[in-house]
Amino acid sequence: MSLSNLGCNWSAYERRLDSHVILKKKSEEKLTELFRSLLHSKVQIVHPEDSGEYHFIAGLLKDLIHLKPGRELIRRLMRTDKELFVQHQNLRRSSCYNSADNTVTIKDAGHSYCGFVNGEIRYQRGTSVVTLAHELIHALHDLENPGKTHAGWLADPDLQNPEEQHTITGLVPNYLEGRLDLDPLCENLFYKT
Image (tube, rainbow, N blue to C red):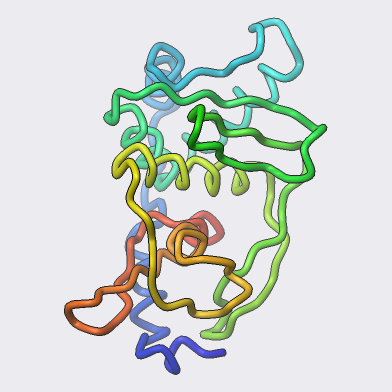
């Protein structure tokens, strides 16, 4: 299925995502400062600091902070001023966000995702950093707009539901104008960095 079939313009989608990609490198000092702020915020790693699980999650968060969209995501999560717990667990079948207890669970492996490549929907393999970004974006949607449900058009039924579509592609139904709008903070943005 093509974005053009949905009334979307592929090149406009690409340009919007490109405008949010890292343009200049932040100093290591500023990145370290943001990471420290994160560790002292209500976003918490649930494992003891001396554990391998803690270092796995902390490493992913550091990698995320090195990306411009990752910094935006972390800052927005901290601005919600709501508790969010991040944990590493390989017993789960897949990584997930649980809104009942505000917990993001990440496995070692990346995940398969549905994204747009040259205007066509394709399935690709994600990294653990992108998996973490994906689940944190779900958490951000929930923490910024508690109880909001996403209903609407799907670009492809394999996207499962409109929340997955919003998280992966950034496409959000605009019912007033009968089109799909783009929320630039989406999983696909992390593949462009």
